[in-house]
Amino acid sequence: MKLAKDQIARQFSRAATTYDTAARLQNEMAKILINAIPEHATGKLVDLGCGTGWPLRQLANSGKYEITAIDIADGMIDMARQKVPQINFICCDLESTPLPNAFANVVFSNAAIQWCNTAKALAEINRIAKPNANLLLSTFGPSTFVEIRKAWEEIGDASDRIHKFENPQSIEQLLQDLNFEEITIKRESRQLIYHSVDDLLQSIRNLGATNASSNRQSGLLGKERYRQFKSVFETRLAQSNQLELTFDCIFVFAKTA
Ligand SMILES: C[S@@+](CC[C@H](N)C(=O)[O-])C[C@H]1O[C@@H](n2cnc3c(N)ncnc32)[C@H](O)[C@@H]1O
Image (cartoon, rainbow, N blue to C red):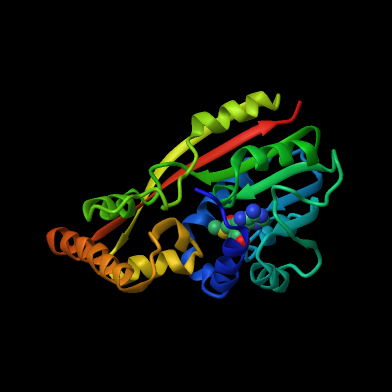
């Protein structure tokens, strides 16, 4: 699936004011990354896809780092700047940043590179990281939103326009090809529970993840298909009194050579 960067930027800017209320899982993922930063790590830290800045605030509060935060959505950066006005923000694509080679001691990225070309994102991380730098990254794997994919399939809709999440084996291979060392990858499946179809779909919109879930089609056909798609969830809800939404959380820890 081609990633339309301007659409991703617009979508996330639109979600900037609702993101914090919907991001409990993302905050838990960020805590796992923050706790895994080695005690001795210090110096320049880059946060790629910083969003509204919840992890940034924790990182800044530690007082250990000189932080640069990057996001493609200016609306997200506006929100983050309110939390941590003292740090340096750059609004750009994390696949191609204006940072110099061998800039960062720590590269941190929570729940962001799933919207990127993984190979390009990891190559850029490798470029901006100093030798022996720490990489702490989380993203989402292929089982993410499996319920949404199945609902589209159930109504006979081709699912190739639904976001494809990278599998952890490919991430590991890409890191090896870039000569990263001490690579550790952890995977954890998490299910969020909803009691209405609208709540489930709204929570995805609040996160800015709309393109991961909607097999977008305009016009009457699109509306009819969307009605059918929702009715699959209404049936599931009637059967089990609740709806699950899977997040296939992937955590990546590594060091540059
Ligand atoms: C799910 S949010 C996570 C935000 C933050 N890291 C957190 O943990 O709360 C994903 C963020 O990645 C940003 N993003 C997506 N694609 C990007 C890209 N190519 N370059 C930079 N940022 C990107 C989005 O704008 C959004 O703010």
